[in-house]
Length: 150
Length: 415
Image (cartoon, rainbow over all chains, first blue to last red; front, side, top):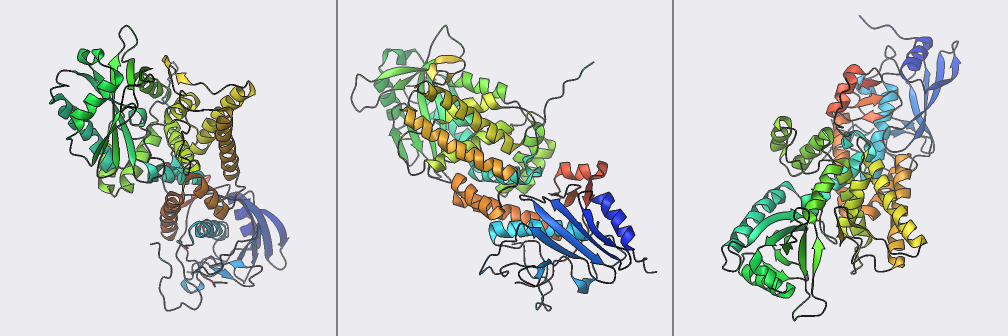
């Protein structure tokens, strides 16, 4: 049996319980849309993180500030594991092919912690030039696992 | 009834900044193989000396001094893998009738055929140079009777001929080590975790598990207290800042004295490092304000002056205070999350050296990335990511503010 799809109100309640610092900036019940903004410090620096979700679409995570740093000529690209546009990228937090996220899941238990993981790997990538959190880039469909931790 | 619990210390690997500082400290640490060798070498040198005619029945005590006595040994200035270790050889009556230079020459002669790469007589000791880059300083001393335990006179003679500057210098290294130990008691949680990593770092994972899980509380931990870890980092910072300077620098024993003063239980490594540096800055500022040189003496032997050869001028002490101010400023920015990780790396490289900082970051990236790939990380309610140390895992079972991870795979493009 398939799990029930969660409404925006249910997502908002779950978010408030798990991450009180993520204030809903906009809730549109008719369009079943919500936008949250919260400050986090996964490891070394603080970030203002935005989460947008409209029922029927994939949730999106963005870093509002500070601007994400690029590393030109890095083997992982100037900024790895994001969706364009380059000037305002969305974080790529799960692999759609693996069905890791579904609308029956709470954003609070998936997208927010996965964004924290992304930020952690991003900081380590800035420090070492290596993306050690694993994953897969578009265009590498035949590669089962891309980056290694070695 | 009030029960006083001994402070266990904070695990430096629980906090991101402390973690990288602790990894840096691990990189400059005397490795387990050399630590074990050092002990056997002390015994071997003593046996060798006692087998010579000049020293037979004339060694009253043979004990470590300096960093080895307080478990604060790090690599020598200008190197990443050379270590200076010190022992004091307290000598008997026969040597009381000799001049400082005669004692040093006698010691040099007794060690001349010792199986090391080189034997070198110095102003206050004879140094043995081993092939694995360990240097062992043997300092002869004469006990000062009717004083505190092991208060002694050590030899000072530049040679090769007798000089008016030759003298015996008061010291009590043994007493200082005991004073330091009393100020920096064992912090079990911190010491166990650091000891485990120390062995692990050297590829001794199996020994790390066996040693740390089954040892009694009084195990011979390499670093017992957060203040000592901070002391090692401060010494490394000094070594790097003065890497291209050939003159005298702020002496390690003086920094150790301040670590003893600044030690406080259960504070983070970065906070301890800032506290230690600030303590020294304040004392230098105070001395300079009154136009004086910084004066630091052994707290249990006032004639044993730690600052007898440094600072040579007020400008020299002010320069060191200036370096420390910059250091504190950058550490505070890191603690407050005001420095981006790439800037933080540049700063840490400038403070502790390129190779050890790169190695520390690589170690952390591999470990943290691996944990994220295996969904072993935890999250705090305020948006922090915790690694699965024992304390963090325990917290997740009792603390609703810590939550576990769900597996996921990073996707997307390279832009």
